[in-house]
Image 1 (cartoon, rainbow, N blue to C red):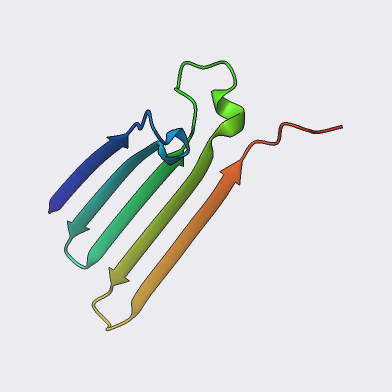
Image 2 (image 1 turned 30 degrees about the horizontal axis):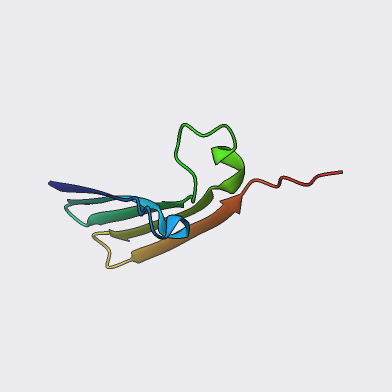
Length: 88
């Protein structure tokens, strides 16, 4: 069984629209593999009161399973979200 975890944070003072936080996890055990990737893009710092309304979230989950009867399952799930600030 193997688990690999990675983190990356990029905070630019010259280009705040490029601020990114990324997390990834890869797991493998027998005939099962999972890859999870989460990206957060936000021009504001996390402690800013309006940070939630400016954050763009992108999540991906890839999963692969292999069974003993040669059946294989591949699953891919992704989501892209951003809170709305102008609901009437």
